Amino acid sequence: MNTQSNTLPESFEAQTVAPAALTAVRSMYWSIRRELWESRSIYIAPLAAAVVFLLGFLISMVRLPQKMRALSALDPAHQREAIAMPYDMAAGLLMLTAMIVGMFYCLGALQGERRDRSILFWKSLPVSDLTAVLSKASIPFVVLPLLTFAITVATQWIMLLLSTAVLWANGLNAATLWMRLSFFQMSLYLLYHLVTVHALWQAPIYGWLLLVSAWARRAAFLWAVLPLLAIGAVERLVFNTRHFTAMLENRFSGGGAEALTMPGTFPMNPMTHLTPGTYLSSSGLWIGLLFTALCLAAAVRLRRYRGPI
Amino acid sequence: MSVIAARGLRKAFGTTVALDGLNLCVEEGRVLGLIGPNGAGKTTALNAIVGLIPYQGELKVLGRDPWTERDQLMRDVSFIADVAVLPRWMRVSQVFDYVAGVHPRFDRAKAEGLLAKTTIGRDRKVRELSKGMVTQLHLALIMAIDARLLVLDEPTLGLDILFRKQFYDALLNDYFDRSRTIVVATHQVDEIQNVLTDVMFIHRGRVVFGCSMEEFEARYLEVTVNPEAAAVARALKPIHEGDVLGRSVLLFYGVDRQQLAALGDVRTPSIADLFVAVMDNQAKWAPAMAHPEMAQGAVR
View 1 (tube, one colour):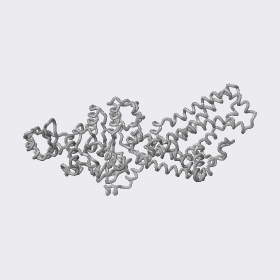
View 2 (cartoon, rainbow over the protein chains, first blue to last red; view 1 turned 180 degrees about the horizontal axis):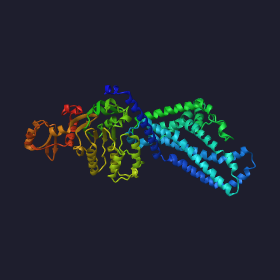
View 3 (cartoon, each protein chain N blue to C red; view 1 turned 90 degrees about the vertical axis):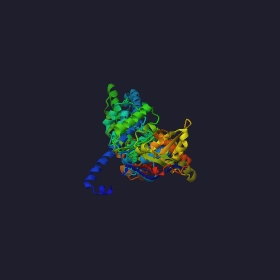
């Protein structure tokens, strides 16, 4: 058999490589679709949050004409701050929703298939453990950020159109609203924030949760949380420092310090406050990504060994 | 090249030895029945063959190492585990979409055709189906995959006899051909007797008996001995002696049928009869085999 394959012409090998890559992409695509079929909360929860927020926004519309009249007395910077506030709130709410959904998804992703024994079915198909784990990891790293972006932009558009309609109906000019909001820049800023903070900076959180999910037989939540609390407590007791806890807080809060100057404020022109250089050269980013890669590699290995629970 | 070649396969879970030097060799075009008591190591052996668990010893399935090459191997191997494993949240159409997406040898039209013969709706969720329907669905999937080896671990467990018969009829009539190989582990020995080309008994992680069905039917005879002929019959060295309604039932290997007919009622035993005999002998004198030459585990 070996002698046969050695004598095969090279063109044959080249032919088999292309379909192999294609097969890998197809497997990945269908595995991700499968995840979305299984965990519909991935898109339902953000959509529901957007709908709830829009309802609240609709009710607040009652006071909009009054608010706009009061605003005209302010300087542009303050006008901008006041106008953008509900839009930031919408983005913040959706990002928080996506984060919660992502964390719970990761905790269940590799444990659920073992608990319902469906892992025996998945493993009876020509899909590698690597593809399976990466397709699950792509939910918090790729799918949720993109989904959050799309839903947030759509929500903000609806808010803007609603506001405009209400102002017109009251005989007011919506020009201030449109001028101060700079919608396109706001969207770009949002995308930058989602990629730098939610997909990459918080990657270790999701990596860790996936690892615990692949490892734990039960009580994945406790296994995910208690060791972290324990490390923090031990550090406090032994060294009387709190570096570990501070690091965790930094990851959870987004640690935007590297990606943006003045995190937490909405600047006049957000684009001038992006600091991708500082962000990309911060060791925290790369250490986090390395940790994530290690967690995923361990999860792939564990999935190979672990059978149904 | 053998479809499955295992030599000295060992697997222990903690202190429990599940496979204790299992030897197995299955050629293309065979339908092998793997039979053994609970805890004999059947499932462990099948799991090792489909790359679900690591093992010690040599094992090649279609020339590949199942543990390190499971994903490539699964293009040519289909597998139904002993429990319903189709994800309960999935819709039937989604199961088809997904398998069609990831399996290069899946013929979707064929699967849809097989499904149309059942009462399963395409929009139903797996959790809404009865156990029999889930098995029908899984069978439709498996039969639409152009695999070279099919591994079945108690595929009909918990199904009624009609479903079980349907299952094996479909496999044999519409799926099996001489270029495919099937390995099936089951307790329902007699039901699959006519399906098999070879049979193998596993006990305590080892193959304790193996032969082809032709040989089985040609060489084994069971005699319900008349009481007065018992002594003569025992002199012919039966491999097993049982008791049914006060009469001795003796199992012979390679003894002439005419000779036995004089001693009582002769019939071809079922696999279950032989299985009971072999297990009984195992229990009596564990290391000494009734027919050691039969226990090499080679299926030719």
